[in-house]
Length: 188
Ligand SMILES: CC(C)(COP(=O)(O)OP(=O)(O)OC[C@H]1O[C@@H](n2cnc3c(N)ncnc32)[C@H](O)[C@@H]1OP(=O)(O)O)[C@@H](O)C(=O)NCCC(=O)NCCS
Image (cartoon, rainbow, N blue to C red; front, side, top):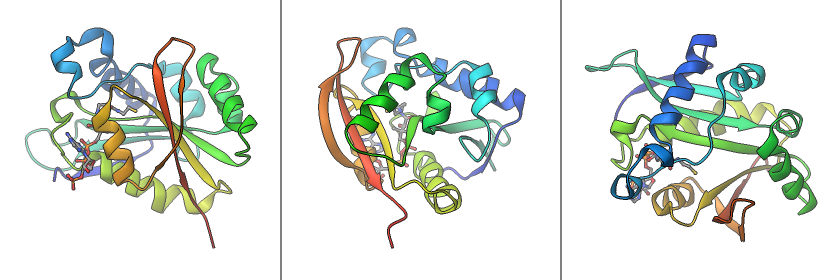
């Protein structure tokens, strides 16, 4: 397992989060590379700075080894209010709300540095552990919801391991087959 230190990023750190996202973006990867995992959505650094409060943006940095101090992964979560100013997430949030989930937070994206993708680095687990233990208990959310592409099987398996359950399957507005996953939280 690669050891990391997790915190909310500075403005410069938000640019580093976007940089990590770009390196995992489908458009920059050939089909073989995509099999290891990919992302389809980029969150501009000014939007990240805007939502960067209450632990909504988390940046993991390597805490030892040759990459010590460098960005290793990120987790972006978006509440209903923050989602309303994002063109794509606003619709997703409305769809979730209309499905009857009233107090939810969306995982807009979780990702690790490209060198670690598909390699079971443990960085993704550390990010979710931090999120579920250090952020979620101090909120009123009762669901954490995300979506993955059916073509991103590794991310799907990863989310099942993180105790998410499959909620529904549908085609998104870009014609991609997607799976909505959720984890119930803050239950007594
Ligand atoms: C998906 C992702 C975040 C997982 O992070 P990670 O650090 O690689 O995952 P972890 O090492 O913490 O793995 C935790 C569990 O997830 C599952 N998993 C992770 N990688 C896997 C792989 N390559 N194959 C099968 N299962 C895998 C396993 O159950 C694993 O537990 P185990 O190693 O005890 O069996 C990461 O690979 C990534 O950034 N992928 C590209 C971007 C992406 O797909 N983001 C999600 C968009 S929805």
